[in-house]
Every structure is written in C-alpha cells, then in structure tokens.
Image 1 (tube, rainbow, N blue to C red):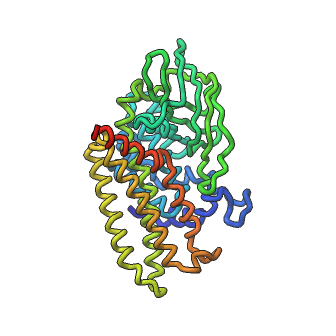
Image 2 (cartoon, helix red, strand yellow):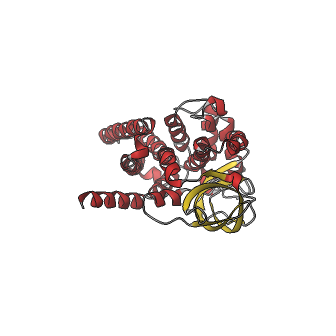
Image 3 (cartoon, helix red, strand yellow):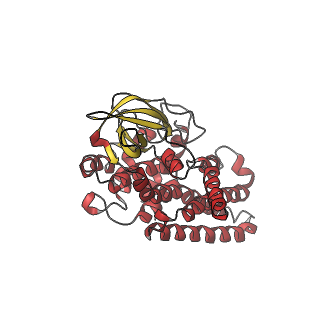
Length: 366
C-alpha cells in the first residue's frame, strides 16, 4: 500500500517531532504534530481500512490494515505505533459481542476524536503462560471494582481515551476483557514516559485503585475464548511496524547505491525477497485464521520480521557511510536506528516470544 502524497508529506515533515515529542529545532512548544497525529491519520481514512462498511469502514481485510500500518511506519514509527494501538482497539470492538458499546465508540474512534489503547500486552503474555494478569476485579451490583496496573500503553491521549484490559474476575473465577474509560473513578494516568524515542505517541502507565467499572464496558466475559481470536490482529498489525521500517531502510540503502556502494545490492535484493515472503506468510496465516489455533507461526514471523528490519537498518548504515552519522545529512537514519532498537522490546518482546517457543518445544519433547 502507498499513502497519499499529502499524508506521506505530513509524516515526513513531522517525523522528528513525533519521535522526540518536540519540534525538530528542539523547542518543545514549537510543534503540534503529536496532538494532531490521531486526527491526521483519521482524515486520511486509515483507521477505516479493514473495517466492514456496515460498521463505518471502507472494507478490506486485516492484511490491508497491516499494510496500511506498514506504509505509515515507513515514514514514522511513532505514527505507526499510534495507528497500531487505535486500529487494534477498533478490532477489539469488532470482535466483541458488546454491540452497544461498539455502536457508541466506533464512530469517534474511526474519525480520530477518541483514542483507543491496548492494555492487552499483559494479557497476551498471560495467554502464552509468560506472566499472570495484573488487574483484579471484585463484583458489585453495578459492575466491578478494579485494582491493578498497566505498566505502559500507547495512545493514552490525555482525558480522551479508553484502554482494553484483561482482568481476573474474582466473582466468576475466570478472566474477562474490559474497556476502561479514562474518566472511570479510580483511574490514574502517569505523565508520558521518558522514552528514548516515539515520545509523541502518548505512551504512559495506568493504575486502577478501587476503580469503578460499569457492566457496559465488558468486551468479553471469557478471555480464553476472546484473546486467541484477537491475537492475530494484535500481533499481525504489530508486525506492520517492522515491515514498514524494513521497506524504508531497504529503499534508503538503494538510494545510496550509486555512491560507490552497489556492492550491497545482492544483500539488499536477498533481504527484500525475505521481507516479501514473510509478509506473504503473515497475510496467509491471518486470513486463513490458522494463527487463532496455531500461534507458533505468528510468533516466529514476528521474530523474523524484527530481525529483517534490524538487518535493513544496518545495511542502510553501510550504504550511507559517514554522511549517515552527521546531523542534517543522515536522511532520518538516526531516527530509524532508534526505531529499530525499539522493535525487539515491543510487548510481547522477542525474548518473551522466544521463551514461549522454547517452552512449547520442551513440552512437545517431554
């Protein structure tokens, strides 16, 4: 997928501001790009891709959404990261039996006037046996009292968001999935986290202290049924971040090939072929729904795509040579290097995924 010239130009112009949370000049008050990001992506119709027309979208498949995130991330990982969070939260509503909540929240989510955050990283690790759930619920006549935390989540636009969280319901004895609005009593948002990059992504932590949650915010009462169905979109769209960065760095390296560095062309060709094959396998697995019951292939692709993105940035470093280490002459390479270093730690991190795969192999052997 290729973005329109208008949105691509806007992202290129503001990529540094979105990464640093500032204007490229360093004046923290000089750019409104982070505050405008959600509405800018919405005006381009990006959040509607892969959403059924009957529910306010433009149709298409989940793969179309993955490729749209990739096209955005090629210009700015911060923008791609926000796009991923918003679009995955939309997917949660599409997959939820709570049609009333979906009817209320889908319109503002699609037009970018309301932010959706995915606090389900903990839940995905829980599903893979990596860690326990970090939020507990006690039932009340009106709903639940929530206590717990989300260590970090992106797209927590101040005073204008909802976050999806999996929690243990101590009444039913089983975990469910809930959408917690920012203004629920007892919800506290931290200041934006002091990140190395992607600082314009409204990334913060949340704490729930006797937070009151009405029953209308239940997405699904059985996390074990719901999470495997949304995990392919969660991780698949996350893979779009790696695809976009790899595509941009391969293109950047090719641009410098004329500067006496054509020796890299064979490596770039091989890496591009690998990227195309990984993208094809990702699409096939998502659309066939095989990843819902056999997630191992999805985990392996997520790991492989991060490796491909990192390899692409390293080739771009070689292709740009000394100019890539000079401010104003690097063509955005320094930012892409920071972006590449972020990809392995996006939850679930590569270490967590590799651990889950190793334990699965061990169980099979045993």
